[in-house]
Image 1 (cartoon, rainbow, N blue to C red):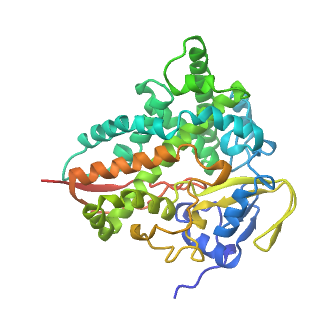
Image 2: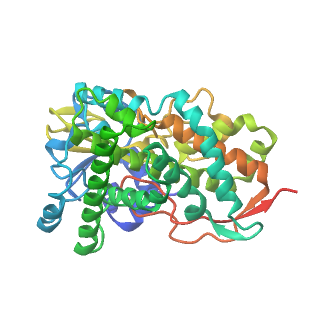
Image 3: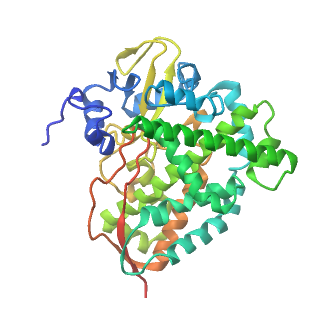
Length: 416
C-alpha cells in the first residue's frame, strides 16, 4: 500500500502539484482537510466533499464577493505595480456571477439566464453539430493528431464566439482572451513581461466588449449581447463587461478541458468505450463521470465574512479559501471507488460539484453537457476505434484552478 505523504511535503504552486494534484488532494483529505498555507496570497485549502459542499451552500459566511480583496480582478497572486498600472485601463473590477452574492448576483443571473435556457441550448445543437462535423472533417484519418488544438479547444471557442454575437474570425482572439484570464486565476507566469502581456490582453478584451455593447445599444441584434442589455435591469455597464469576460472562460476554457478529458478517459478505459458503442444511452453518464473524475474547474475562491469552524478547524474572518471541487469529487467517503473512472455507476451517486452548486450552479452547464454529448455521438458515428500511440509528458497544464490537458495525440480509426 502506498503511504500518503504529509500535506506539508507539497508546495501548492509547485509545477508538479499544479499539473498532477491528486496525490496532494488525497493527502489533504486524509490528514488536513482544512489546510492553511501562506503560498500565493495565502489560503485555507478545503478538500473534503462534506466541507466543500457546506462552503458552497453557505453564501453568507463563505462569500463569493471577492472584490473586497481583489481590486484589480481575481488573481492567484499579488500584482506588481507595473501590472496594476496596465490594468488601470481595464474595466474597474466589481464582483460578477461566480464572484458575487445576494441581490447583485441575482440580477446578473437574470440578465444572463435567457442566453442559456434549455430551449436556447437546444437551438444551438445544430450549430454545435455542424462545427463538430467541420472539425472532424479536417482531421486526418488513421493518423495521429493532437485533438486539443484541433477539436477540444476550437469547438467551445467557436460556440461562445457565436453566442456572444462576435464575428467568426474573432475565435482565435477569444481563445487568447480566455487564456489570459485563466493565467490570472491560476498561476503567475515566469516573467514580469509575461504578466504584463496578460494584463494588456485583459485590457484589450474589455475595450472590445465595451465597443460591442455600445454597438448593440445603437442597433440591437438577435444575439446574446442584445439580450443581455435588454435584461440588464439593475446591472451596470461595468458588470456587463465583466460578465462577458467571465463567460469566455466558462464557455471556452472549461468546456475544452472537459471534452479533452472525456475522450482521454474513454481511450484509457477501452471497456467503457466499448460499453458506449454497445449502448449510446450511456453517453450522458460518460459526460457526468468525466465531470466528476476530472473536474475541469479544480478550485473556486471564497472569502470568509466571520470566524467560522469547518472540518474541525477555525478559519478567521477575512480569509481567502481555496475550495477544491476536484478533490471533493474524488472523496472516497462519498463515492465508492472514487479513484476509478466508471460510467456504469453514476446512477444514485451524490451530485458532483464540477459545476458548483446552489446559487452559483454554472449557468452554462447545459451547454457544456450538450457539447460533450454531441462530440461523443459524432466520434462513435465516425470511428471504429480510438487509439493512443504515445503519452507526451507533461500531460496537464500547470494551473491552480483549471484542469486541462496540454496535448492529446490520438488516432481516430475510420469506421467502415
